Length: 286
Image (cartoon, rainbow, N blue to C red):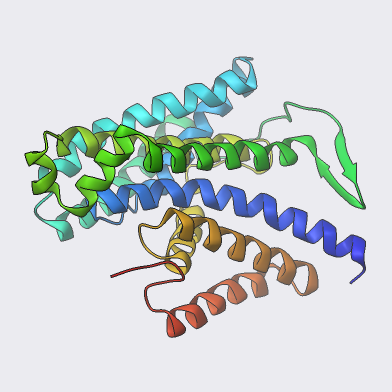
């Protein structure tokens, strides 16, 4: 592999890593607050993509406004789902997992009825390519990297340095003690679910110009998000960043050298090796 091919492969891997990072960061945030694995998270990604498909692709609304609308609408949907479904089963974690599986199937079916099962596509919102040092990326692909990085950085800043973030950490550590300090776990859980859903919608909206869209695109995405979280450690934002970079770069390198099927095998192989050495993930904790 030449240096130019290596640089191109790493750039493609970085782009995919940033998409994985957005989806996995939202999923990790929800897990850290509510301690459930939301299998319907991929469907929120899918619905976010459909919002951009209709707002931008069908109705001609500015792409960035469509992306923002997708984040707001799916974030609101996530908060509603948490408040009226998941929160009612907060004491029964197995029931919450079963609920998320049922919700996944329900949302897939509803999207199939509402939008159809045929493949849909959106024209690129930008023309031309970016070229530097032997690396060539279409502008819509290049855009994924800074937008994803900014959103994840904003999430990290929210959790680390804001009063709301401190409240989230308190609820994640001990909801009863947080209540004694005047923090509402009900409000914090809904907010966390809404933010996590918004990040999934943002990833879906960013990927719409790149790949075909169907009501079933969320399945593969959620599997990659689970791999990222398992690699980095459940509930760790730092782990999400590390796991996303590992997965994206490994997949891109193996795809270039061998093929896509082998890339999937390699990704899960890396996961197995990491978990054998560190069962809690790279940045996981007890």
